[in-house]
Amino acid sequence: MSSRAKSRDLLFRQSDVLLENARVVHHDRIETRTLALSNGRVVESTSSKAIRIDLRDHLILPGLINAHDHLQLNAIPPLPHREPFGNSYEWIDAFESHLKEPTVQAAASVPSDVRHRHGGLKNLFAGVTTVAHHDPWHDGFGDPSFPVGLLREAGWSHSLGLGLPGLDGAPRYGPPVRDSFCATPAEQPWVIHLAEGTDDVAAGELAELDVLGCLASNTVLVHGVGLTGGNVDRVIECGASVVWCPASNLGMLGRTLDPRRLFDAGRLALGTDSRLTGSRDLLDELRVAAANCDLTPQELLRLVTADASRVLRLPECGGLNDGQNADCVILRDDGDPHEALLRATRSSMRAALRCGAPVIADPDLADWFAQCGVDAVEVRLDGQPKLIARHALCHEAASMEAGLEIP
Image (cartoon, rainbow, N blue to C red; front, side, top):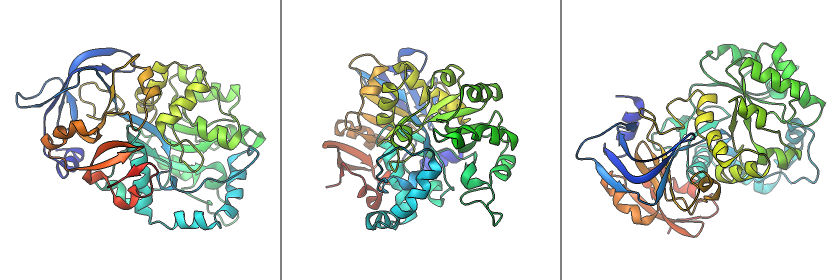
């Protein structure tokens, strides 16, 4: 039995499930079919005793992938500023004084486990079932009750500015750039903030990374606002990828990248960054992306499913093909199925599944929780009643989330 299955069994009964009469939305096709789920995976067929859920007039989408977040930072008050920063290092320097503000100190003093779980809840409420967390691995991520799945098999460094040795021979934060890259197996992604700015410093970072020998097919560059046309050529030539975070870019830098060439090459994914600089959640990020590029709704769906799966080397995520994780988002079928995701809000989402069982859903789906042996808690999310799996709901973390009320 896989570790994923063992973790699931700690939380709810093993249940075969048939999701019937819905339209299943893939990035490249739409099917009206019964979706069979068993042992936490999508399967061709399942037992005659399977739980049957009638989802007539609904859409089933793959669980979304947030390709970049800092989970522990989502309740830290943002840094006020009037003018865009030239690069992220200027923002980091300015943030040092912001750390002295009482509200920031209070938010940062919340225990790390609670802050990480809060970041997990933020993502779950937006239909995200897998997150690439760009900071040290936290012990709480191994808890099967953590609200979302995490990218585990990956290497990372924060950035060139913080990850190269200083005068004392040590990086300012995170693993050293070259050491981390060399220690990461070629089949795993290696992630670094790069070219996060609009000035010459940002424009020169890809060449610097290339000279260090850290630009390869498994290199994942976060932000990339300062990449030149020639830089993009080089990224594509190497088979490297970029995670686009338009809300964070526009808010901090006043500009974001044009995603078209990277998207057409299959070298792009979408991330939120944290609320410290970015959008509220991935649903809002998708709308910001749509307003700032020519990608179609279908192409935007690709960014948070199949393309993110490929960029992050997560073949089990981002789709609803046989053998993939039974992680799903369920929406009402009230128009173009690809545009539905751009219209979706946390309160309008009908359900999100992990390992084939509901984690959050509307109250009329209560029997589904019961049939899977999932103990559910009644809450209100943005004014709408919801049920949340008790195992995913840390009350300390929930109290940090605006719009979430627990009676």
